[in-house]
Length: 178
Image (cartoon, rainbow, N blue to C red; front, side):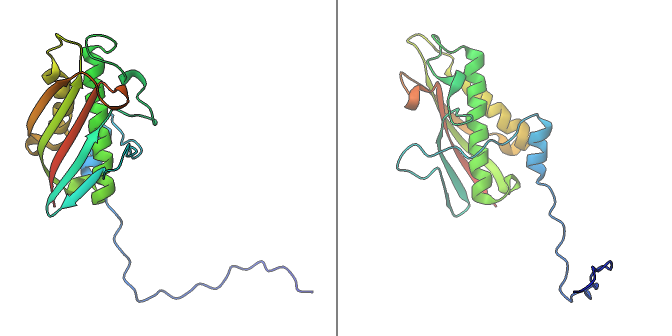
């Protein structure tokens, strides 16, 4: 029977392999956190399509709904009826956070986004609701605050009667990437 050992294992000699540099935090993600936003879990694909597709230096993000924790919650309904303008603006921001989550998954880091090129938004509203542009400002202003001049983009804000799952807003994105 052997006695218990009170000694530490022998120290291994250092290897000749270089030590990889410590991974620096992504400055865009740090800025997003400073803006009090956190990237959500990857939003699920709701059909037979790719949520994100990179081709060359372009990254296309399919239309994003304001899904949070796998449901629409307060973002189900139409502007001018069940949804207030303020809630619609928050929904557009959630769509953008979902798109950024997909972009990070595709690129590895948000700092690889060179420029926001285009944002197309669809707002479900009642007849007579005409503030689609104000709803989409929630997405546009978040992108400009995050990326500065490179966050400025061309855009369309379209009013529709219905969106998938009864969502109040759906937004698709086009990014130029490194």
